[in-house]
Structures are given as structure tokens and as C-alpha cells.
Image (cartoon, rainbow, N blue to C red):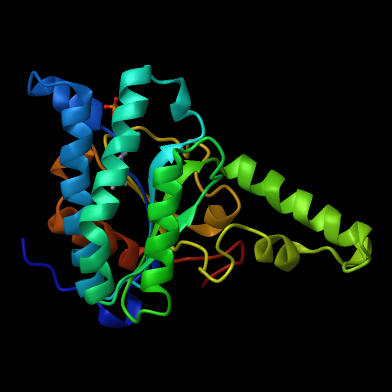
Length: 241
Ligand code: FPP
């Protein structure tokens, strides 16, 4: 498929719920982890494709705070996959000018994973190309809880006057306050749910859902999502004539 995208209306920030790895693997007669490994290959292609298109920020749901409830082997396999993927990709991301970020609670994650995350954030800081923000042990409600805790502490110490607490202050206490809110939220594998992803930030995101499972998602699908986005009229609660 060759699509002509309007270069003046590329979503600056795309968020993706990468769903369907398990179903994709089952359809091939393979185990779920095989699907996650294929999902990693897809993610790599999509980061570089999004960068080429001119997307500035890509936030992907790698592991939710609810994913701990999966079978132990799958959780362990996903942690190991992320450690190996980070080690394999870190230098290339730094060389190609990609910035790496993480959103989520570090507590509960293997130390080795937290360490490679820190290293990748440090080694890619200030890079000029796309920012890949990986949501790991992430929950949208937990992120708001963490922001509230910080704000309450700041209020207690007199840094913030409670009557002045507003939306901008809450936004500034989220995990990556310098990343703008997502313009477009993509979900693969057909479910019509937000699943506790970027609850605060996605308030006005346009949503695009495809039946395609994540391992089969390609640059063509990304372009189809952006083409659809470019046809939408974003109203932000107002009236557009
Ligand atoms: C959802 O599919 C996918 C996940 C919970 C994991 C996403 C992780 C990856 C795509 C690998 C990412 C790699 C790195 C380096 C971050 P599912 O298992 O819920 O699929 P199902 O709904 O078909 O069961």
C-alpha cells in the first residue's frame, strides 16, 4: 500500500496497546512467549517506521500493572525478553538518535531490567529523533496515585498551595511530564478498551482499533491509522463549524 500522508498533520505522539501476541501464537500452534518475541520484532520495525514518518513520540504498553496476574512462566519470560531486547537494542537506539524513556513503577521489576532501563535512558538523553516511551509495570490509575502522592508531599512542605492545584500541576507530576499528550491511540487485536493505559494523558486522543494482532502489525497499518486520524476533526469539547 502506498499512502500519501499530509506532512503538516502527523500526530506528534502515538500510543499503542500492543495486543494479540498470545492469540497470534496460538493460531500458529506456538506458545505465548513465541508471540511476545514476534511482538518485539514488530515493535522494532514500528519505532523506525514511525520515526521515518515524522512521529515525535511513541508510547507502547509493554507490561501493565495487571499483567503480574499471568502465569509465572509468562511473566518471567516477558521480563527476560525485555532485558534481552534492551541489551540488544540500546547501542543502536543511541547511534540512530532515538531517545528512550520508561513509564511505570520500578518496584517489583527485576533489578537487571531496572538497570538496563536507566542505562538506556542515560545513553539516549537529548537525542534528536523519535522518543520511544516503554510503559512497564504501568497502570494509568497508579500513575495518577503516584502524582497525587507527590503533590500532597509538596503541599505539606508548603511548596504548593492546595487551592492552586490544577490540571497543569497534575500533568507535571506524571511519569514523563515533558512528553505531550498522545494524539492517536492505536489498539491491535480488536478489543475496544483503554485497559488502564494513559488514563490522564489520552483524554482527547483519537482512537483507532484494528483486528490485526500486534505481531502482524506493519508500517502499512501505521499509515492507515494516521490516514484515518488525518480525516478526523478534533474538537476538544468545542464546536467546530
Ligand atoms: C498483549 O498480548 C501483549 C503483552 C502483554 C506484552 C507486549 C509485549 C511485547 C509486544 C514485547 C515487547 C518487547 C519489548 C522489548 C518491550 P496478549 O498476550 O495479551 O495477547 P492475547 O490477548 O492474544 O492473549
